[in-house]
Length: 179
Image 1 (cartoon, rainbow, N blue to C red):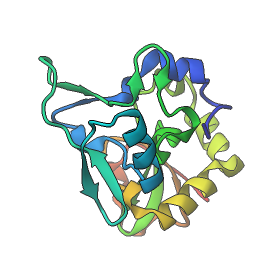
Image 2: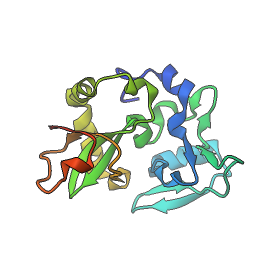
Image 3: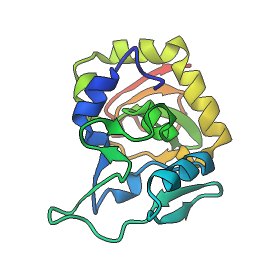
């Protein structure tokens, strides 16, 4: 886990919020690389997949439970992710997400994580600047299937280089530093 200085494995395993999707946000499930898919197939031989982009896939979701919720098939509700340290990249960096805004990459913060909600924006940005942001941006440039559309609800923590000139700051909760 890339974020162990920020989030403990125990906190993540207890919560699991990032592994639960509704029928309306099911598209937000993480992209599975070929390696991760192969491991998932070994653990879940009946799993089905659909393509996402050029090199990734998603779990095929046939139905949800009576509350319209989908649990990631790799979630063990007592231990956390069955893949542990080999989980999908987007899971490794959660609650951070890579997004593209006006052709510029940025790292945004999901507001669902209770642990990071207790941190200040400055603490989170400082953590990212210690090398994590560069790793995230480098991976995203090599694997664009992990880049999500911007939802205008999540705070922007760091831009890859410069803030886009035509980005309307009123549409974002927060725009911070340049890397």
